[in-house]
Length: 241
Image (cartoon, rainbow, N blue to C red):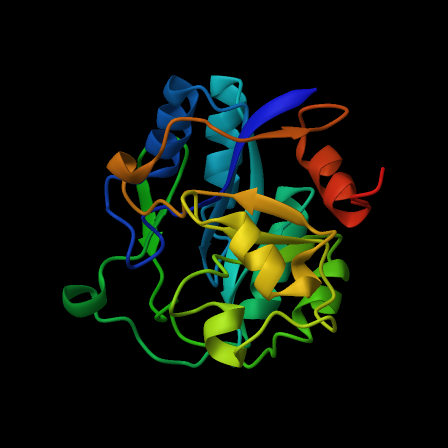
């Protein structure tokens, strides 16, 4: 089953996300654009995942709960989970691993926690864009403990990427996939960083605003359109098959 996807989207919980990027709005925009499956990946938090999954269910769009974790090296890693419950448990642990720095909405932006009907339930007080105490090497195993999978985000960017932070994409990185921005030249990275070969390249928007959400271009072939099916596919991905 070939499905149009975007596995890197932010809601108004991310301080750099627009306040109009509510779970309801982003889900229904994705539906209008023609996506089959998306993921909500706010910075260092999963607190809007329940609303997004519920909004997706009403819109007949699969929403995978997740987060974009910022490692101690300031590398962004997308973490995805098979259920809201697993994502929320991971989020609770991650919350204890980020600095206790209060957000300043006038400087960094609001961090709204919403329900699936655009009602504000509250605001996250801690700043969510800070680096956690988790190293890049420790993220895959930590995510697996909660039944999830992860992949390094936007490895072609000059900041918050594994290559910008470490200077390379190493063989020791225990992941089956990586993310490139939509317009990056994959052949350049396959040639320059051999460890990317044999891994799944995902192209996501990393949209923080509704107008940044792109028309569907990329598909993934899953046995069914569900979060558990995606997680199993990414866990067991084998390029030779």
